[in-house]
Every structure is written in structure tokens, then in C-alpha cells.
Image (tube, rainbow, N blue to C red; front, side):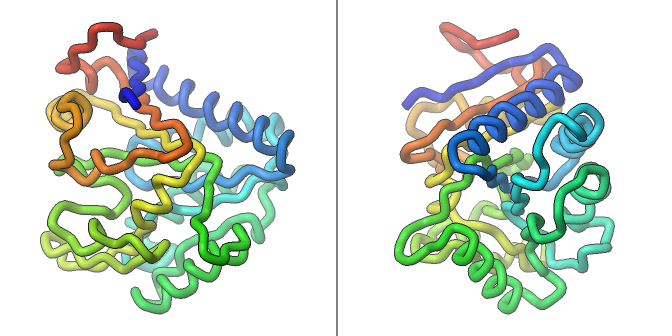
Length: 249
């Protein structure tokens, strides 16, 4: 399946497009199945998207039917400045009428092994898993300077995990564990949406998106089997891309 890339003029346009896609998928999933499941990502780029959702969709979406998960988490307490949950809570969750039972966070304060086990059980209970994989309606992902996504970093053991939904991934260069969902979870989603913004990401974006069939970077191994892989990027990040028929706005 070819890479689907949408190029928007700037970061503000990216935020609007991502928020609109969240709302579109939420409306569709809730109409069809009565609920919408989304895994959020950390980092600076999605923060503004979450804030825009809180501002413009506070009363426009049935938040009691929306279930929030996380693709990964740092090995910190939920009130720590580096916590992905804290960022999402500050920007979005604390500003909309979403029930606490609908927020399924990774409890990193339990320690890596216990946090993994707890999150595995949360996924199992919500998606009624037996031998299959969870199917999220939407997973937000970012792109690191080294090509990582979620907490699937280069040269780490989690890259080869094919039987577990969640692992504690030791990242040597960070000297820390990261709790992350695995490729089978990402690749069973209905839609995976990469958000990439800024000129600093232009080089890695080109290296990840352009080479056909390459698997040099962890982010290149995200290919939903029966879903959509959608890259939403701003013009600064896309400045090195060359497409025969670019999808731009």
C-alpha cells in the first residue's frame, strides 16, 4: 500500500486537520459501535492538537463515549513534567467532560513490570481479548529524530516483540525503561496517524517516508494490516519530500 501523506501549510493547519480527523473518526465509530477508542502520543506536536480539541470540540463530541489510551509512557509518576499522561491531561482531559473510567493510562509509577502487566490487563478487558489483538479506532504517533515512534527506539528489544501487546523497553541512550505498545498493536489499528511538524524533522521524515520498502527506522515498520496509515505533515517538515502526485492543501 502506498504511503498516504497530506501536506498542510503550517503548524496551525496541521493542528486543525488532526483535530478534525479525531472528530470525524469519533463520530463514525460512535455511530457504528457506540464508542471510540484512541491511543494518544506524547511530545510537543500533539499538545497543540489536544488543546484545540479541548477548545473547539468541548461540547461538540460525546466525551462519555470516547476512551483514551496511550501508546507509550515514560518511567515517571503521572504528575511528573515528562509524563505523557500529564501533558494530555493538562491540554485536554481535564478540560472536557470525559469520565475518569474512560481514561486508561499506563501506571508507570508501579514500576516497569507491574505497569506492563496492568496495562495488558486494561487492554484485555476493554477489547475483550482472547488470542487476538486490540483494534484501536485511531492511534496518534510522532516521529523522533532517530526514526523512533511510540517508545520503539532503534536497537532495542521491543522491535522484535511479536507476542505481547505491551512491553517495558530498555532504551540505553536514555538509561531508562519506556512502557510501550508493540508493533502488532499498531499494525492492527483502524487508523494510524503520524503527526510531523517543523523544519527540524525534514531530514528524518524524508529518510523514513521516501525509501520504498526500507525498514531502517522503527517508524517504517508501522503498516496497519487492515487499516489506514496516514502521515499529516506541515510544509516545513515536508520541504525535502518529492512526490509525483503530492497530496497537499
